Amino acid sequence: MEIKTKEKITSSVGMFSGITSFLGGYQVCHNVCLGIIAVLSIIGITITGMPLLFLQKVAVPFWTAGIILLLITFVMYKKKKCISKNLIIINSGILIAGIPFNALQQYNKYFLVIGGLILITGIVLIIKRRMK
Image (tube, rainbow, N blue to C red; front, side, top):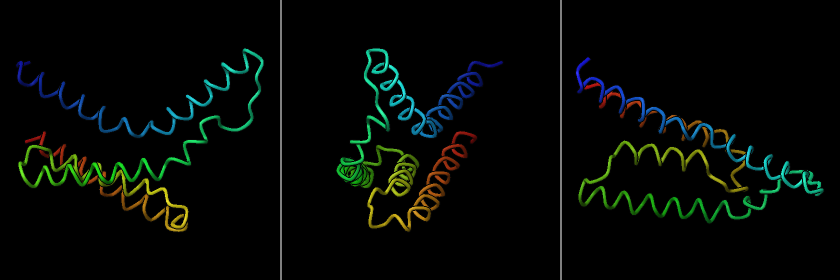
């Protein structure tokens, strides 16, 4: 195999791995909570529930910071074109899918579907670009 072909395959596999890493986000958080519960149980402390549930209280500020950073990134993209537009699309999809507002919980599934479709669109655009 040619070196360029190997590099393309390696970079494509790395890109796919990076793109799909968000899918395990829930599992990582859940496993961290289970690990905390296990460690505390070894020293005799029993916990029921999830010890990191307090992070729900800061979900809105973190999401808001994500939106602000996305807007800054978009402005940088418009001025200098130094950032991948496909990654901006992917990040937009993630932020839409993860809207944390309780008042909008009845629409949560719609935000998840719309954000997921935007995310998948960004991934498909990256894959198409890599295939060329």
